Image (cartoon, rainbow, N blue to C red; front, side, top):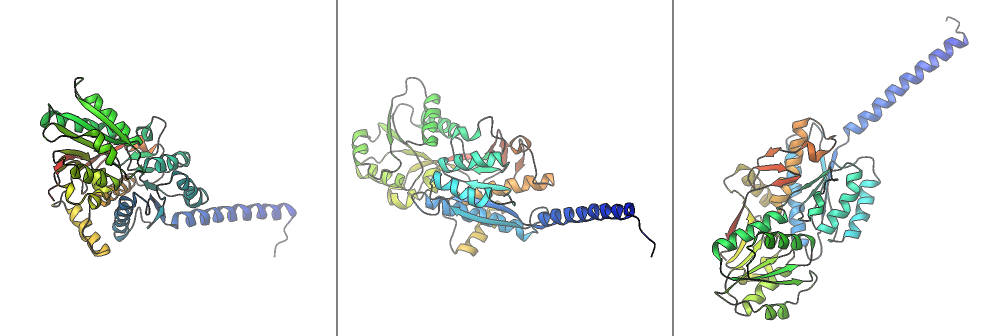
Length: 371
């Protein structure tokens, strides 16, 4: 064996360190790249808005299963988990710290509902460059500083303007009685509605605590009259069904107008027959669309029942659209996602979605509850 001087030994040592460093670096990189992608649902599975929370969790799960069945995203499987926020903004922060902040494998998406929960999660996720798909109405969710936030819902402006156009067309001379929940989305929908109405519109406003289930005094105070009044209701929660039922109980049989929240929150379960003839500005599932047929089939196979309302479609379409965008770009590492995804279109059960100004825009239409 040839004698080695100290320079040779040092040289070999440096080379060995460099080689080990390269190999080690590749191993770390490969380990990271071989790990599954993660997506998380921040949904209320218990509490007053558990009905939409559970259904949105199911829709998101079905979307992830569809992607995994065709090989995953960009060659990697996707892991999905729902965290029960109980619609509690403070608990949402604790969950984020435990499931996201304390891990190296950051999720490629978080989907959430309930304004307070979503806004709290968003504050942390934006700093971590993690996209938040929020099915909420709060306008500040999409302020100019947000680069990784997408609204997967109809905005308060769209809903409020839609109400005004409907009432001007079908009830132009009636007094408007507006019941609204004291929450971000409901308050902002009311503002958009008032801005779109003629200045001489005859309207009475009644706000209520979203934690209440007692509407008798509110209904008696409003004194809605058949043939002379039209009632508008906005909010999120099964208690809306109690309000509708009590309106009917006190003999108001005329038009009640609301939005899709009245369909995704278990309202119909509480309203019962009183829900008949309520007019809803709602998303438009397309039963002949193959996306809808696939979701309906997989939902029934997995959960043993028909899709009860639109919530699973909304969450399915939200995560499916984002994953399709990642696939189109060949990466999940995208700076300023909101800017990059602008103008992206994707087919789905709710019709063709187009991303504009950070919002997933879907076709909406009014429909009357028949039973």
